[in-house]
Length: 623
Image (cartoon, rainbow, N blue to C red; front, side, top):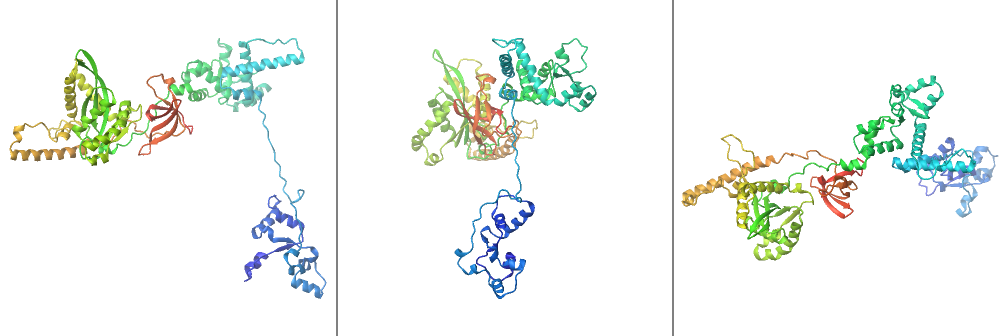
């Protein structure tokens, strides 16, 4: 009614109060926590949705004018006046209004819903505690055997029975066998209770066992154990083989037994281990259970682990975009040693290969030692002959890492004196491959193999001098740069194959000096060279770059390695089952969002490795 009056009247009320002379109603309204029966709860919910609790107040019954309408009253002037003006206390300040201290709801009210709660306590048996505690079948058997012996000791001490003998000293084989049978009997009574009761009752009830997963095994009870009946009763095999003990497929005891036989058989496959187990036990769905155990075997995981793979990364811009000049982006690596004759002694020399990532051209230098200084000098010779590179890619070799540190210090002084300030502003961007990830440098590694093949063909195990070695290096450089970049066809109408040498020299062959002395002939030769250069670049863009489109390996998109994954680090210096473990601490995704490099936390510190040198053992998401 109050809500309806406020909505119908064009009067704004500053405050609205509701009065009742029922203490029970006030208890109901002020109780916002207890759950009432449906009839009371629906009406209290309506009151709470339209009004606030503090709007309700108590009025004594003798001053409640609503009783005039509900109970009736004799007609007199005073009654009419009270009905029109309301109770007299409304004309007084609020402090004089009737007040009553309303406590919380009565706990014994019949309208309150009775709530009942039940606490269930599951008491785990001692055998279950032992089964869940141990992860090795032999240790579990020993624990149960010791517990059985202690139980027998308490029985003798309490009852004083002299017919029982207590074994002393170490455990015996018969005690372990008894522990095994007791454990299996305990498991069977839990999981095959219905079948055991049917077999123990009478022969008629055995018909009901046809609805059991054991129906094809024709089960039977032998010494309190559920065994396979089968069709081999009249064979000459041992009883344990004719009537193997039935085990459930999914139980901790079954897993421990299968794990024991798996280790006993030398971590062989599921078929062989299952055949060995069936000489004594018959595991329901044994092949599936055995494969599950092998899948969880840590030793098998480490032995059968395979390196992680990921989709081959897109080619970087340095491999496909046109540059201002050759050798703008360079890959560098060492190879050797090469033995040279120096006087009467034999010394080691090393080859330093610089390859243009865009043209696949090669520049070879001789390094006289495997030190940082020797590499820096080889790099300076390369820069003087081929120009200043913008990017250098290399393996994470110790000499190359040191060269990068020293080179950054030396270049500041060296460049200020020798090179234009613009080149100093550009500097050299040095990119290192992850440690132990040689495939990141496949561009220069392939060139090293070609250089070795040429050197082996030229040297033929003959002793070299430094002068001969430098000559052979340049000859090898010429031969490699003359190799075709695209397959050569038999069609006579095709132009000559593109080679790195033609792209570097901008000509097809070396021209005699006398042929270019004439101005007219020189102009024609220059136009021809310019034309050939344009043809070469167009063919290079169409033919060679298109060959880089295909992925010849790592063609499948795989799961990204994640932080928290447990991996095994491949090592060439130890056996596979002794490879160190690492935990992925941080992933280093490539530009395409795929992870090909990670940061690992190991026993020896933090390492950065390529994923193809890692074997995933346990994923953080369990996959």
